[in-house]
Length: 347
Ligand code: ADP
Ligand code: MG
Image (cartoon, rainbow, N blue to C red; front, side, top):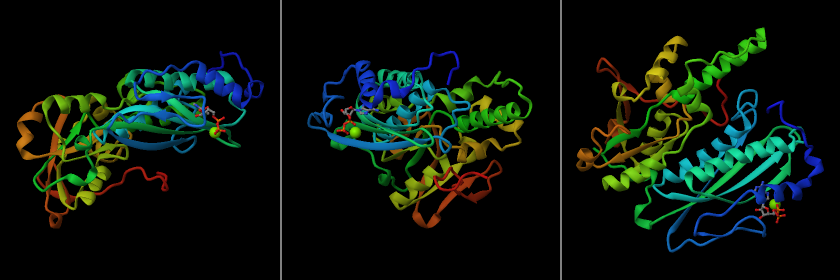
């Protein structure tokens, strides 16, 4: 929270005043949004399509630390992480609802910043904020976002459709968000001990990956353009390894992933080395990259080959072969998920 902002107490507005303030800054842009904020419920016209609905919650102290996350970025990210789940169904999001629990330690200006970030994300991705809920919290800030999207029935891609011999493809690059978090945590610790101002120079890319992630709307469009329908798909929120295992388990098959094919940005690589971490481990288990992982039939190889946004990192095998990682020397290891687990905090 910025100290330079004026401070208006939430109590001076009250719950309804706050909702009115939020509503006054929102315009509906989507044809399918029939009614937004203001009635008991929003009204959406499915326009003959299948609807997909998903919710993700962000809890202060568990998912974010206001010590280094600006509220505007937090608002942006809260929307993006939900949209990512809609894209992972090969669907297009059109609406979101936002529920927030707040303590009176937040002034009205802080809520404005949070909603400004959400509004920016909504504008960027073409979705309408059509409702929500507001309540008080005796401890931290909680933000729960529900995203609603749509797709033609035949376009929807599930986690369960991968077949033996399908190619395993990942978008973008991996491990950056995790390394960004390591830099932020390190600088926070230094600040606590010495009061030294954070030294974030040279880490722009990975900090952005952590603080201002984007959802891969472009990939859904790219797949349509390439005329490729993935056989299965998932978004990478908990780390590549964990998501590969989800695809395998839900599709009832195995997988072989090649360490050398993992897409890792040079900045991520260098920072991992500086932290004495193995870059591949960061890519496999880091999480929060919000990239898409999907499988395609071998016949689609020519269509995805060489695309700068796509990396073929392995293939699917029969169930009995299990899940494996092939290392740089050709050795194989069992693929294990050490990703972020909602109930087991890292040490
Ligand atoms: P109810 O008591 O029926 O739950 P509320 O007073 O909570 O109604 O909400 C009134 C309207 O304001 C509804 O349309 C609701 O979706 C919207 N709303 C409430 N809180 C928020 C919020 N934090 N963000 C966006 N819309 C909100
Ligand atoms: Mg309510």
